[in-house]
Length: 217
Image (cartoon, rainbow, N blue to C red; front, side, top):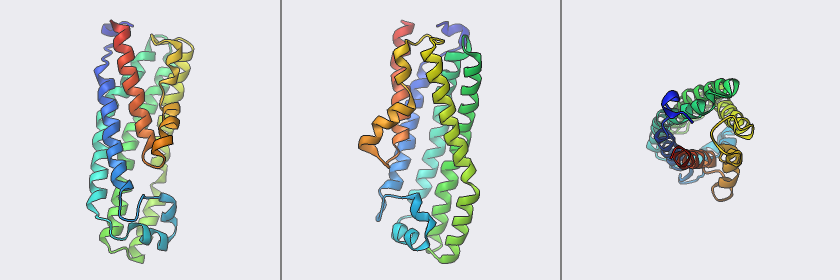
């Protein structure tokens, strides 16, 4: 791997691993609510939404949203390194990764803040039925942002997996398992419903950080 030519810097991978842990801490703020964990499926019913959010401090949503935005700023450099890994020998996969990076990080930042803001509004409005109607309408209308973020993650993971399997990067073929999708499945065992994807993504970047440092030596 010609790190000078590609401007590759594994330290960005480490920062991305930390960033996903920051995002995970924001997820945990939504998990540990008085009547938690927060279950978006229950948002579709007013009575369930009130029961779930009764007694919740709205500041939890504020902090969760801020942590999500900060986290997306921290991880974007790491995702860009995945693009650089593929740029030389897998140009199409690299472009797909770059598109996925923008969707993941930009749409992800908007998603984290908009989603937590609507819950903040509902709680601050006293969990009224009118506030619920506004929150639910906002939830439905902004759902495409969540879809864009998740699509971005899939694009990054699939393109990286294919590039590694085809030996189009400096990584060994077995490194295809150092990927958010399988690691999220593993993280879901202890952390189901607790932001397992952020744990899986953090493990991916941490694994790639140590592996690329070893290769560069």
